[in-house]
Length: 115
Image (cartoon, rainbow, N blue to C red; front, top):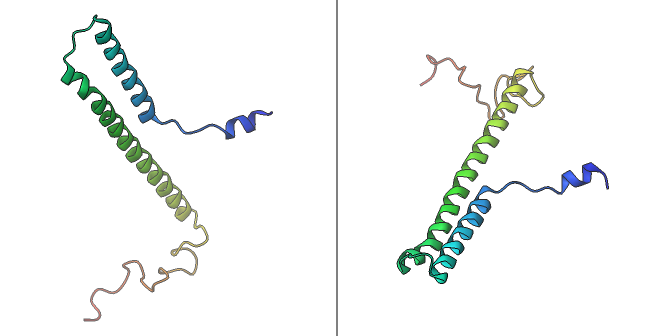
């Protein structure tokens, strides 16, 4: 098995799963301490720990989703700008262009003419 196959099987890092796992380990540790008599945690606080852990993981998941989406948009925008700067094929302002496929000339019309 070569290194290339091993790399292709890797998966994307999911911080929300890490946060949830760590939070659930902490909840389990608090329950264990209370069960052995070493911790004096009120029962309503124990009952709130699990939903709090789930909520924390959800917040992390939303933040990571937004960050990845913004990064993807930035990458696609940079690629589009680089393609336009190089006069890539399919660019509406390239050689023989002058407008987009809907007949709009990109705001270069004579503003004084017409109604």
